[in-house]
Image 1: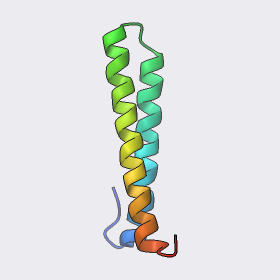
Image 2 (image 1 turned 90 degrees about the horizontal axis):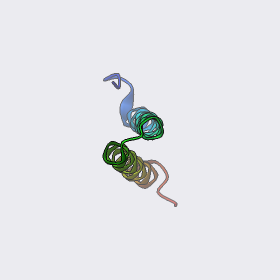
Image 3 (image 1 turned 90 degrees about the vertical axis):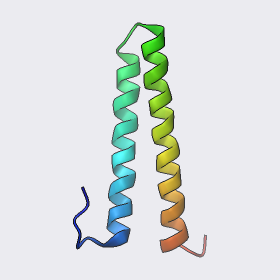
Image 4 (image 1 turned 180 degrees about the vertical axis):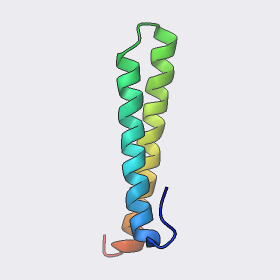
Length: 68
């Protein structure tokens, strides 16, 4: 969890890293199961984490890199 004194830039960077770690966890979980339905759930969750990460990266760029 982000430290309250860290500021919004650091908090967004930490959130992006957290989404990346969650993505990797779900991808590993999907690779570690044989049940098709369970695999689909983990793959769906991994895809959701990518969406979250992209949303956070876009917000980071909008706020901290406005020239992009």
